Length: 398
Image (tube, rainbow, N blue to C red):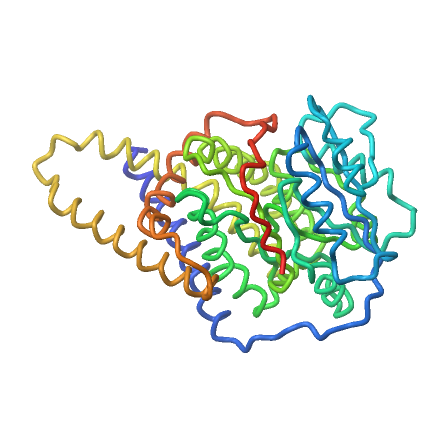
């Protein structure tokens, strides 16, 4: 079978998955918006934060949690320092957190979470909240998550926004990326009773759900995506709650961004390879079908790009290579990306000042995912690497 024939087959599968995602997005956006009713604060939370060399920012997060509009007796904050060469534990303790010590080696975040949940099991908590050390949490986060649980949710994903969207064009592009994903993925799925993408920081899980799936047992570098797949296999929906907002500090350097997003790409590919066989053979359900197609697309897209490059190199010398047509397509892509970025800015931060460079360079940011996905096919990331934090001093807690 030739490269072009394989490419045609992969492209057909990708077109089918893209059509499915487009259909879900359009039909979901056309449905009526629903909102969780306010409920009395009854959920007892354990807030869990895995932290590695985060002395500069961990206190900021703990203080934002202490300022929650939620009864203080109904939540405790636990920090899990691991592999630290600084005073992360001391900074967290001074800010008011309790410290959980890891008794086993930690190579990735999932290892720390597994040990933390094991230590907290049976201590009377109704649910666990998971944040990253560089986060700042909106004052209503716990209350809005409580509302969702009282309305019947079992796993809750909050809205993620950049803490420092105006600090650089890269940080601004992250903010636009999160806004776009919420608009085209999480919002339609929330209205269509499908699962939100449980990725990144700021999510909550009921204690009985962890018991149902046998505790926290992820093994990939993308522990959040792996946990979401485990939830889908168990028939558990991830409920998107946009009123619960986490501000996440983003890299300002494009090079740092490359390292971080390459890790994300590698992690999703690992999750796909691990979970797709179980999802394929499990009984059919909308939740399982949705995440199966998401993980399948993550595997097929870089393969398709690689095959397309090989095919293009093989035909590069042919006379039908139209450089002007290519330039026109690139210009159209860039213009469309900039317009979409401006729309996202107006939707996600209507009263905020704009990051013009982020809007202009958003197409470059999105295009840079493609080589990272291809690279992740061949270079597996197994260890978490430190992303420098603490440069931003702005804390937009409402």
